[in-house]
Length: 402
Image 1 (cartoon, rainbow, N blue to C red):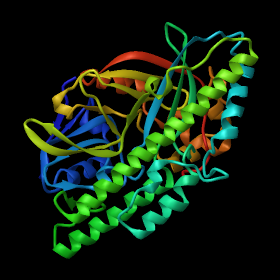
Image 2: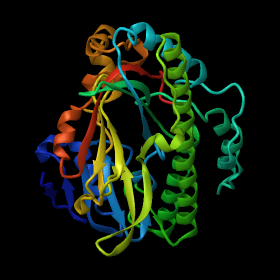
Image 3: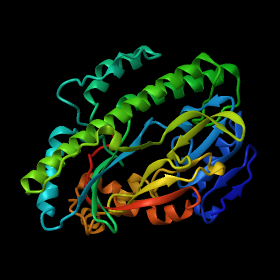
């Protein structure tokens, strides 16, 4: 579809929505403020899953020639989704509720959920990095090794799916850089706010910016890139546990299967990051907050809410969106509103057709609190092409937001 254009006092914004009035008021104000950050290039690209975020809307793409803005990256740096096609066709009789509950149990033994941590520190070469601030270095040494291979809470999930049409079984995981990534984001947002105040630059609520050619800007990009790598390693380790558990349960049910593709067989796409790229002939820093790359031919994963479809997509390289697309369904109500509106039995009803058991601690993740993922996909048909539509069989979530 052709995006709608919003004129602002800064650069314009192009929105992949049907009606500008559908964008909530606070989100619209955030878009207008984002447009006035110095160095913004061409326009903002606002995805169909747009909703209010910290300082900047979730579902936004902002290219900047001069600045990097921590809160237009987001607090869960490098959060993303991995998906693996097992190649095995779902057999309802042998892969029913017992099969998936067994798989869930095995996964939960190895993958800490919510605020959970590993019992012992994990090894990873990335922990040898030198961070830019002492408190961040301590997190990398003491906290991150206990969270590598853990899910977290909120909208993060582990899921078993079946592909429409073929019935092939897919496994997906959505998670990010955990507490350490959050602290990296908060630290550098604070640095940006103090720098802007010291230099007397125009203040924007929660939108402190760092010059790309400054020490502060380079420090943020360095630490951000570490968090992106950490988040990917985190997802890979969970996916390896998920695949091993799947193979074990298959064996119990007399199903022959073995994963042989390694990490090369896993699709990965991340959101909440900034990346140096060339667009319209200019070198720019492209911020994607709740948005992913969608270069020509690039594979990606766009999940819906718990209980809704996940799409495996291929990028169309649309220049108007800076070769980007939506990262998911996007919320329609806050977590507090969802908890007030839905009860546990409501959540279970919304999960009809899956083997997922509703719990009181994840009511804020009820499908009714999210946009319709099919509508989101329809609105971005000029950004990505659908390759596979996956329907959930079993979703695993952690309570809490850590």
